[in-house]
Amino acid sequence: MAKVDASAFITREIPRPGIDIVVEAVGQVDLNPHDRVLSREELLAGVAGRDGVLCLLTDTIDAEVLDAAKGCKIFANYAVGYNNIDVQAATARGIAVTNTPGVLTDATADLTWALLMSAARRIVEGDQFTRAGKFEGWAPMMFLGADISGRTLGILGAGRIGTAVALRSRGFRMRVLYHDKVQNEPLEQAVGAERVDLDTLLAEADFVSVHVNLDESTRHLIGARELGLMKPTACLINSSRGPVIDEVALVEALKQGEIAGAGLDVFEDEPALKPGLAELPNAVIPPHLGSATIGTRTKMATLAATNLVAMLRGERPANIVNPEVLS
Image 1 (cartoon, rainbow, N blue to C red):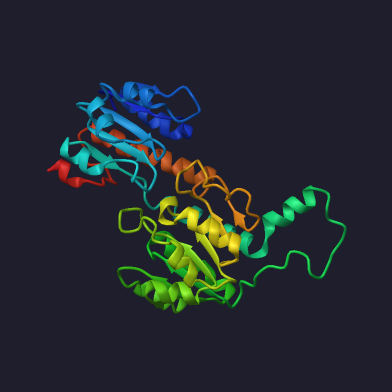
Image 2 (image 1 turned 45 degrees about the vertical axis):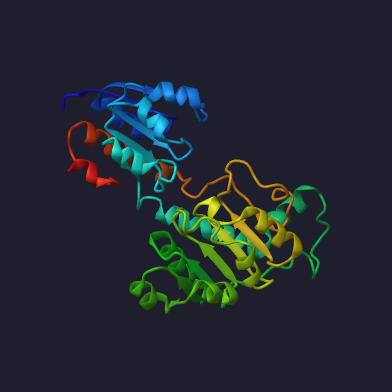
């Protein structure tokens, strides 16, 4: 198929199959040559005059950027979330926004369980202890953690990823509670999950796993009051979006022993951490690795690229967030 007479910009290197799809289909393609997030000035210059932009969750695409990309047809986001893009402003300018849903569900659910188990069994603390040369042999009271099997798992947001996390609990014979705006009958049938209000979930769950989208209704959904409702033996896990949790309140709760531990793959002011978080031994804090498998990141790249190319060819992208721009 002939190349589209168009110009595209990719804001950071992604797995090669995604880049190849764009290069093979679009006449002019430029790629951020640096393995880092572009500065504001670089981003504004990079999007100028482009017909399409493949951007990342770390790129803030606001009205100023959209105006700099005057005439652009699409911003294809390399992520399932798109809170980095002002979708309303894009729609007002007739610019399509797409995302990469579905392909990262299993990888993120797996990572969520890695966080849960690491926090419960104090794996990171133990690893650091051993590496520091402090391990002198087995001891009956050393790094005692929490049981997982037979405990209660609370799922806050029972969408694709929340459901996948809950389904993985079957091997641990867990009671499953979930809080969501809508009923999830398949989840109820699969694991006997019970839909409850937020306060009940927080008060009864031994592990609270957060899987909600970020918007004004979910920003600081978990704050000091909510943390105070949790058991002192409970662990809080977040692999959704950092600002869903009031990180300052969480640091205080962990310091004071209001909850036993936390596993966070995302942070409120990412990549910065709130003061004190990095020093807490009862917090597991990997650097946003939810989708970080070779297979998943490659699927994300090819999906974002396919969305971009479809729009530039005058076709409907498969994963358009604001379809009204096509009407």
